[in-house]
Image (tube, rainbow, N blue to C red):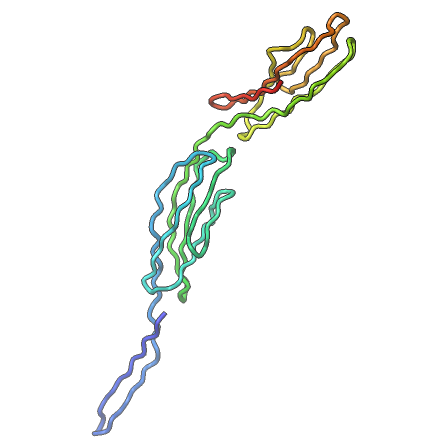
Length: 205
């Protein structure tokens, strides 16, 4: 902020008189933050942009936001915003951006934008089930495990269950005790299907 000094000069009774007034500080003016338009992106898509603000006094500007979504960053010096929403963050996010100068007193300008994240379904991942050898009359039980990036619900199924075997579609628990006529090899496919839109699946054998 520049200081303005006023100096008065007057001629009094033939003598030169100099009157110096006190320093007067020019009043600080707030920065002006350019509006950031609303934006729509997909889960997993990167969004980056740079905030732009100007200050009438030429003061330095710092950028901030009290509303950054989880995982988003904002560089306070450059105004660069960067975010790649994960596959659980489909929603609308009102975000306020603030440009603050370093004048005395510090002044700021605030703009709000809305970032909308569209849901993009990702397939579940079914953990591989190791090959197993058992005897006739021996019980075999295990639990299938699948994870979903979107945290969708998962249903388990199999088109190849041996006679007498069961698979709980909700828990993934497989249970079978082969009888004494079932000595053989059984290729069995297990499928984990989510309830996203569209529904997606992973298969292991």
